[in-house]
Image (cartoon, rainbow, N blue to C red):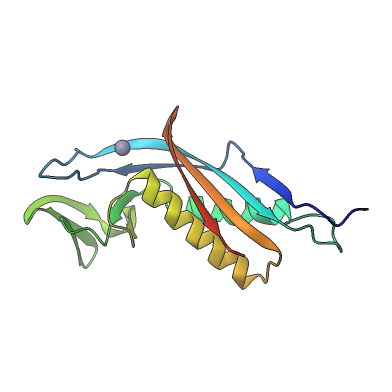
Length: 167
Ligand SMILES: [Zn+2]
């Protein structure tokens, strides 16, 4: 069998979803109100064929990892920790959220996902999930991967895709 050429594998499943609340800040002083989406996630991984197993990466394992990454932020309020305008303050069992220095929300801590991103846009969520997936794959000693592509969709036809070259 030829060793030339790379394979591209893709995984998309209905259960790669997370239903979460968020709000986005825009340039200037605009800021959305709190609302939710049924986010859908599609992962594409590229890489060389592992010639012991004849796959690029184990689908079962990829699905297991992606499901866990989605579960980590499912049914939570997504809050950005690296925003210039949104300040997230943990006070015991609650999280207080200020926007532009004004108190806006108080949530139970257990209902929040505090994320190391500047804004909870689909672009930033796609990048975050890609980096978390890459960390998992490195931990597992995955070899031969050349790229990870992560698409996060918040509404039908409204999505962002992040691509990370890992070779
Ligand atoms: Zn939204």
